[in-house]
Length: 371
Image 1: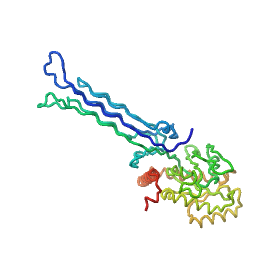
Image 2: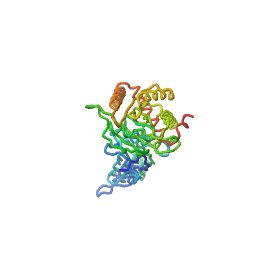
Image 3: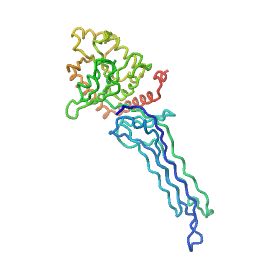
Image 4: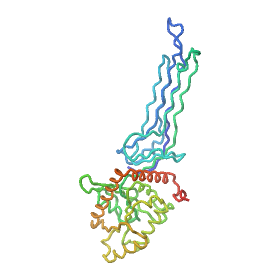
């Protein structure tokens, strides 16, 4: 199935039914009085995360959704039937944004209760409602109100714990193949990864995390070059980023310069995303001698002013992969535990997620918001 991570749809809630103008006319009842019933409420439109879905491709073929309207009231004080609500299922990780105002309506990260995105119209009142001691035969009714109509932008962000970041052919796909059951395409030429791939890394009973492999970035990506920038928004949901650096690029380029270029593109794209916890991973270390590897690590620390984690791996031979995955598992478990126990930390994480959703949803350069 084709991977689609953005779609625009229009939703229309049902209109409310009109109130009825009616009077009782029965044999032997001289003054029957009003008996017009109310209309029915219009159906509302809801959206719900469904774990069985993993792409927004269906919305490309079905972009319009409309809930049914309420029926009009009838005589004998009969209320019109309400229109049934319409529930639209989307993949977990979908953000629902008002396309006209930019308002974030819902962030459907996990399966749960449906969220209303368009409210149904209110029902009209029949003439029975207007009967009083001074107005025994009212001829007044009200019409049902129109249902809410909206244009919505749907943006799917993959829900993963760890995101892989780097230039094409940095070894991202090879790593995810080595540590999980995912089987992304791997070849000895760049841009083999064209869409994000997810893999579950298992470290034992009830110990696992999700790793996301993204298409490679190139220099100038923040300005629109290449494919990777289109998918960077998926990294906004990850707990931490792994920046893979090829220690011996096939084109003979300097690994330090290539690493610095990726950091620059990330900062140009989103300062919030650039501030997320990030580890450096030197990949393909089987191609380099130990002393040269140590020298490269020292140069990277100086050039990037790097104080954080640096891991050495060879996904081809498996060297260092087990140690890296264990460190990732401990970091993810610590994050999950802190979310449960520290309310302030959990609140800050939700706030950051919301900021990134709005930042990417507006489709503008993040720097414009900080100017």
